[in-house]
Image 1 (cartoon, one colour):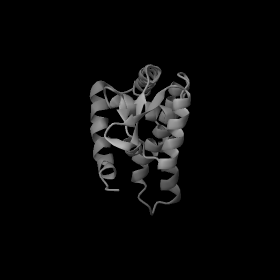
Image 2 (cartoon, rainbow, N blue to C red; image 1 turned 180 degrees about the horizontal axis):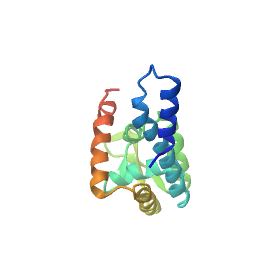
Image 3 (tube, one colour; image 1 turned 135 degrees about the horizontal axis):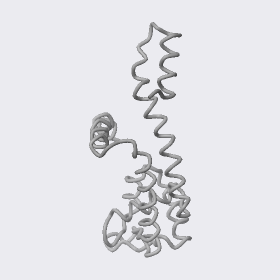
Image 4 (cartoon, helix red, strand yellow; image 1 turned 60 degrees about the horizontal axis):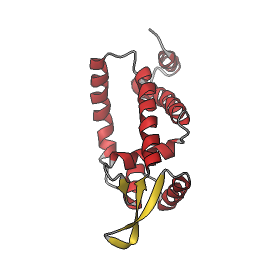
Length: 165
């Protein structure tokens, strides 16, 4: 079975036989898959009335476990956005009654962001919808192939995830 990347690589081999275009075999496919995954995720979130950033914040809180709350700083670490961006996101989610701000009992100046019952329901439904879309994307691979691919991608991505700062 030939795909678009095969055609792209063949064209580069013809036009630039002096270059080793082998990395395109993997990384062009990863790039194309990322675009398909982004579309599937946006569709899954839209089906539940969420933007991707809303899903990120709600599910970070949901993964925290009971009482489903984190400090804004912890949310920053998990979602990789700036402090000002996080403040805006918390404001918008609070305006939709998906999260609430509470005083931090350990820091008089601090606050905690807690998932509301509506926010928990929204996060749970959106996650289930996302997983259904992602299963469709992976349907061509057996369970063993998915595990093998996950291990290979982990090996490739881990050095980037473990860079300090």
